[in-house]
Length: 501
Image 1: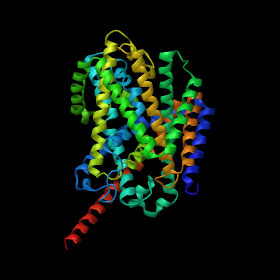
Image 2: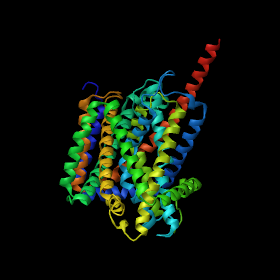
Image 3: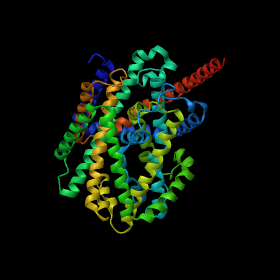
Image 4: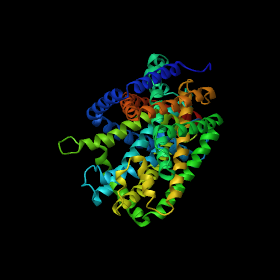
């Protein structure tokens, strides 16, 4: 336990205080956080739109500049993981459960309940719903994750610094990162990670519960969700104990196999030709409108600003709040790749994969809705299972989906315990198992308490509020990274000149 830093104790204290407040005053806590969240969305919406777009441009410039040749590690190092395992781990940490949770529901809701621009229920709304789903889960998100992860990986593996958010700011603040300022930044990262993952665990438990209820009549409520969380906790703790190269790697590969299997079966059993046509057209629509969508702020009356706040700005803040966790995990599994390989892999492959996923599940959901079965009436966690009811082999599809959610659930929690262990042991690449267990139990406990008091909404609000200060940290990380890359290129040029002599 000697390696534990004060970040651990401060973050644990803040987590306990937040959970006690949320559990003791759930209604007031939700109301206050909702008011603050609405203020942040309304006042800083333009800022989030500009920031996410700037990060896309920055990532593309870095990837295709001379900096792209720099390796995340020593010049001779090879990647720690195969490309297949690497991609699988990106998804498992980045947005695994979310794809299953929202894959059918989000495009359907845009189509039937709350369209950004088009008239509800029209062909335009159907297409627009898919294009905006690609936008919310695609290039912008992964460029943002990519920049955070790149800064962490560069300073950790190329420059030999601890794997901490505060380490990435040393080019700007020097040794001040060893003091209270560095501690504050790392505590903010831990806080966002704990609550972000706890919320994800809560959503996973709710959706598994919904699937079991739909198939077997299991009651929807806290007791079944308690049992689900306890079982998953035991499983992810076993995986966490086995380490990164075994537990998370094998689980991530399993996730990809299950996800590919479910995707293929849905494409075959669903409206295959419609899925292929809708993907082709709506992905083209996404590319065509990406600049407009990136800078949309709906400033005038009648511009549907409420939709923008509820969806795009909500997502941008939500993803930023996940950046410390996902960025740190992606950085950890990316040693040995060049910056160009890294950024292109992190941005292009996930964008394509999430787009084909939403095309398959969103088109199938829209088609079921058009054929007279109103699945848009169900809660988000039930849309998928009610959609499957209208397809052949529905029972098998639902079982496969529950297994996939459980597998993603375990991997997300496992990845988070690893990252939290790193952040609270001064960036150790092999955090002690006892620290990982403490964080694992903490995450599950937070998720259970919030499920019990119905506090997931308040928690979501809290994370989105916390994303605002972290967004300023991200800007500083980008500036520090650019400064360090410039210095690295000058150093490499000097070394080559000396070698020629």
